[in-house]
Image 1 (spheres, rainbow, N blue to C red):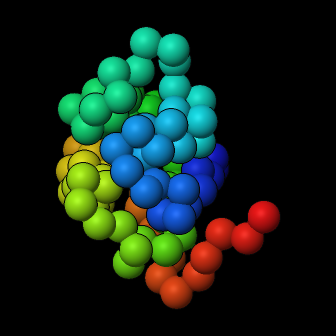
Image 2: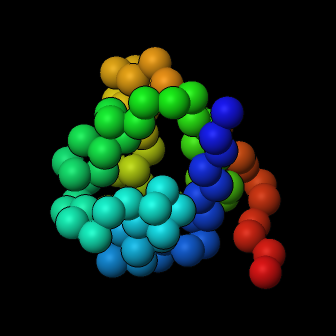
Length: 92
């Protein structure tokens, strides 16, 4: 099973969110960098994949909408699982 780790600390605004998502998922260059495009690409995932979101409690503003998009995509795509991880931070 593939695992994708996302870090809320890297998603400070709309541009940073989409930069991080594009890198983490290895989205194609033509990724639309909006939540509708994200939903579409998540629905195209055709192998078992777990999405872990570290520090989910720190999302705010536009970035908070990510949780809803992931919830909708996991409900629609049986290949996706979502695991929010609370109380941890990204350490480099």
